[in-house]
Length: 225
Image (cartoon, rainbow, N blue to C red; front, top):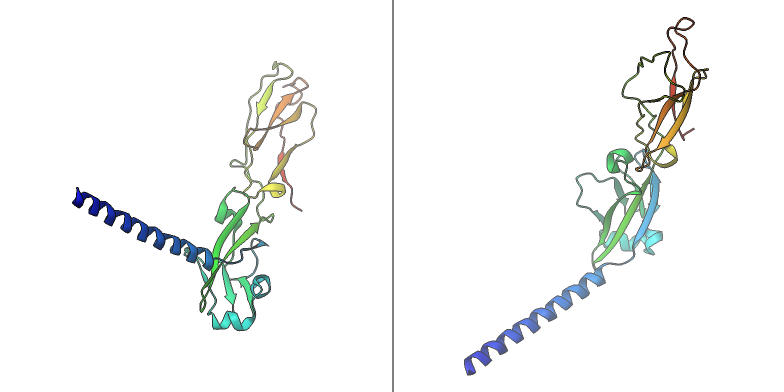
C-alpha cells in the first residue's frame, strides 16, 4: 500500500510539473504573438509594388525593425511579398495570380508572419488578393449544330453550351446574348452552384424551303470593362 501511495504521489508531481511547463509554454506563445494586420491588393501587381507600411501599421520604428532583424516567416515555397526593413515597407516579390492561388474560392488570401528578435515578436499578416478582369469567358467548342425539324412544336427548348470564366464576382460570367432572329428567343438560368446556362426556345416555326440553314451567334458577357 505504501508503495502504491508513493507511486501515485510521484505521478501527481510529474503531472503537475508538466502542467506548469505547458502553462508556461502557452503563456510564451501568447506573449510572442502581437498585432495582426491585414492588407488587400489586386492580383497581377508588378514586382516592387507597395503592399503596406509594416512599421507604421505595427507601431514600430525602423530601428526596432533593424535591431530585431525583422523578416518574413512562411511555410510556402513561393514568397509573394518581401519586407524592406530599412524602409519598413512590404512589397510584391512575386507575381500573384488569384485564379492560380485560390481557383474559384473567395475571398482569396494567404498568410505569413513577421518575426522580430531581442525580444522576440511574431506578427501574423494576411494578404487578401482581389480579382481583376484578366480572363474572358470561353466556350469549349466554337461550333454547335442542331438538326431541328420544321414541324418542331413552338416552345421547344435547346440547351446551349455553357461558357467558362476563371474570374469571380462581378468579373465572372454575367449573361448570354443571342443574335437577333425571328425563330428563337434566349432563356437564361442559374444553377444551384451559381453557374449560368442558356437555352434557345422556338417561338416561330421553321420553314426549310425558305431558310434551310440558320446561323446564329451566342455571346458570353462578363462584368468587366
